[in-house]
Amino acid sequence: MRAIELEADTVDAAVAEGLRQLGVAQEDVQVTVLEPGSRGVLGIGARKARVRLEVVREPAAAEVQEQPQMTSASAESLSADAVEHAREALVEICRLLDAPVRIEVSQREGQVIFNLVGGTSGFLIGKRGQMLDALEYVINRIAVRDEPHAQHITLDVEGYRERRRQYLEGLARRLGAQVKRKRKPIELEPMSPRDRRVVHLTLQDDPALTTRSTGEGYYRRLVIAPKQPSRA
Image 1 (tube, rainbow, N blue to C red):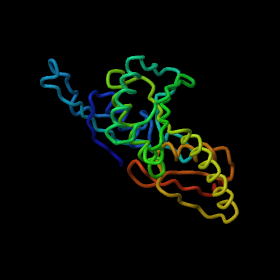
Image 2: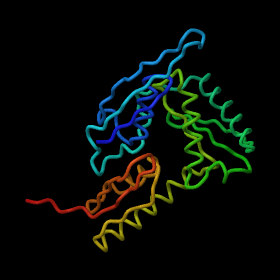
Image 3: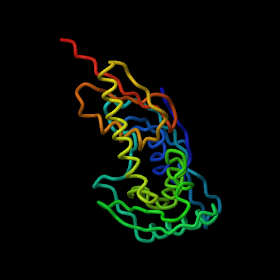
């Protein structure tokens, strides 16, 4: 049974990060608060919250809980102060990385998007978007520190996220056709929860295919397999 222990500034933040790493929804885990944490007095004596998440129900093959995000209508919008604080932090991080950028801030369906524009886009994206995912994680830790139920910020670099989505959708369809033709499953390269979710969604309505994740950790592998006929 999969389990994880981790620390964060608040219990809610620790649980949210645990769900992200495990790739499951909150109803799929049992949460044990090991240390509730404390802000201390004027920062003195502050302690991190520590929780243990144990998976009690693995998502079904076609479920798309690969990347839990605060994107539902019940999630709160980030305050203007939190957005600006995150933007300033990202500017400073990029400066320290010697990758100065211009940050375009926009909103789409209530989701805050930081689009990084500059001459170091390849470096900020990294291999299969790993650098961009890491930056997004850090910025959201900063942004939602005092607003754990708020929607997360999406980081993009000159439209990379959309290009990556289109590539993965095309890959999923091509490999799906191959699986149906050869009647043999195909295991993809390790992917982030965001990328696995795209593949799941692309193939979820295909009656001849099923998808599932395998392995441990953040970069798990996704398997596309022929759906077995139901027994009478």
